[in-house]
Structures are given as C-alpha cells and as structure tokens.
Length: 398
Image 1: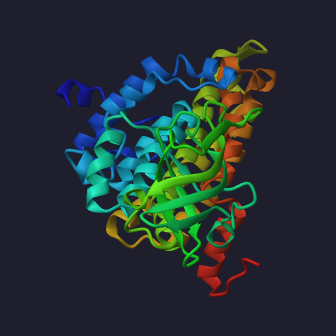
Image 2: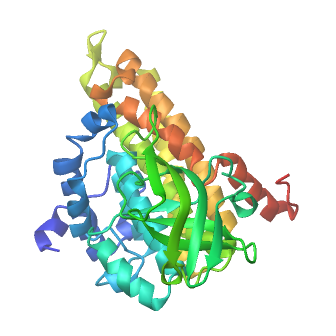
C-alpha cells in the first residue's frame, strides 16, 4: 500500500458519524485501492451486465489481486483481517453493486469458509490458496427446492457411503456462482447416521449438472442455478473432514450472516448516494430539487437509517472479533439492516420519481436487488425468531 493511496483515503460522506476512522491505516489503504478499482473497472459495466443477466468474469482476477478472497484465513493472506474490516469490504462492494458483493461473499465466505471451518489442514492447504488467487471459483450448495429455512432438519440430498467413496443424490436451488464454479460445496444428509456432512464436489464430476435460473428480477448478475446430483461419486478425501453435523454448517453461516447485513447497508448507501447526486442535478420550479423540503426529508430519513445500521454492524463484527458474537447478534443485524434497506431504497426511488425505475440512474438496480438481500442468508422472519428465542427463552419456530 502506497502512502499516496492512504493520503487519498477519505471516509464516505454517507458514513455520517465517521465509523471508518476506526480502521487501521493498512485497512484504509486496502479500502482506498478497492474503491478505485470498483469505480474504474466495475461501476461502468454493472448496469449492462444487470440488464443482460450476465456475469463480468473479467473482474475475478482484479478482485483476487486485491486480496478479497480468503480474508479470514491465515493460509491465504499476509495479515489477519478483522471482521469489522471484512464488513467494510462487503459494504464497499455492495455500494457499487450487490451482485458483485454476493459473488465475493459466496467465494470468500461460504465456499472458502466451508473449507476453512470444516476442512482438514490438508484440505485447507490444497484448496484455499487456489481459491484465494481466483484460479478456482467456488459455490455453496445448501438450499434445496423443498428446503430453505428448515435446512437443519429438511435436507433431502443424501450421501451414501460406498467403500472409500460417497454417492450423492438430490438437488439444490438458488446456488450462486454455480453455473461457472469449479467446485461446489454440497451439504447432504448421511444415509448412515442421518447427520449433515459437507463435500467438495468438482463440477466436472459425472452426474453433476447446473442449470441457470432464468427470469430473476433481483441480483441479476449473480448466476444462480438449479443443481441436480445423480449418483455423483466422490472419494472420501473430498468429504470435509471436520464437518460432522449441521452445527458445522451453521458455523459457516454464522461467519457470513453479519457480512450480508453489511452488504445491505452498502446497497442502501448506493441508492442514497445516487439519489443525493440526482437531487443536486435535477431542477424543478427553477431550483435543484435538493432545495425542496420534502426531498430533504427523504434524504435525512435515509441517512438516519444508514447511520443506525452502520453502528449496529460495526458492533456486531466487533463481537465476532472478540469471540463473543452469538447467533442472535448476527440475526438481529441481518433482520434490522435489511428492513431499513427496504425503506431506504424506496425513498431513493421516490426522490427520482419516474427516473427511479430505469437503470440509467442506478437506483432501480439497488431497489430491485434489495429484495434478494432481504430474503437470503435467513429471512427476516427466521432471524426474528432466533432473536426472539434469545430474549424470551422460548422457541417459537413451529
């Protein structure tokens, strides 16, 4: 990181209370490099790819070169990154495009996280450096056509032991990156003991197929797929050796849920910043609409939502760094920030009037993408029940 890069770093105007100032100089430098890359290489192309529902494969190497893949894992990075810093990275990515943030979240958090949490030292050494360099792209196969919120009990994909191999049969749905991933982490229920186990499945394996889900109106750049597993034979060496139950799956999700909350804040900021710029440029009744009281009211409510959300996700990630974060902490952050995001992108669209529904001004993309962020990595209802169980001592899931 050059001193010039750090000198050019300034906190976002939308970070109204200046939470970024809590970062170290090194972390600020990495964020400055990331912002410059996103502004020059990603922002100019996202609307075209969103409209076409295509993924910009050319950005994978650039994101890898910035060190975004494998940040939690010491094997793949020259320094250990804090959860707070990882959150700011998710925010920066989503501030430009939530689909790009989702791609990185799947690669870095869910796919690499599964190997980092559930893999043996040998598996970590074999796969994580190659994924950190961008040589290998991963996907995370948990959700199924008939199993979403009830994945802990409702998985229908089955893994059957056959000598030194495992045979996988079943299906997965909504699997991000899966149309072009090199490996997919498949979570399946063992026919032997009924426990959930994880498998590193090369996508070239016979019997594995991934079909792109068409017609999405949210996160259109993310290449979600339906996966079919028909007698997919995997050696035991590709079973995640330290993943023996759904508790290990949940540990991966616990690491990433707070980062989805950060991404929700970034999506809110992207919409807010686009609305603020539009309000300064758009002239009605002889003056910029930013001088109108009702427009200022929408913008102030938006920055209030953003500021409250940043405060929550910063503290939530601090708890993770301290080793005291619990499931209910991440769940509250995810439920709260995504709900506030929904309000904020709606107000941003309102600022733009009719122009808020076309891609040219960016807000329409942030508005649509908010719906997917609101639902994935645990719906608001499920996260509410996790928090509700914590504060009342009563489980109300069924």
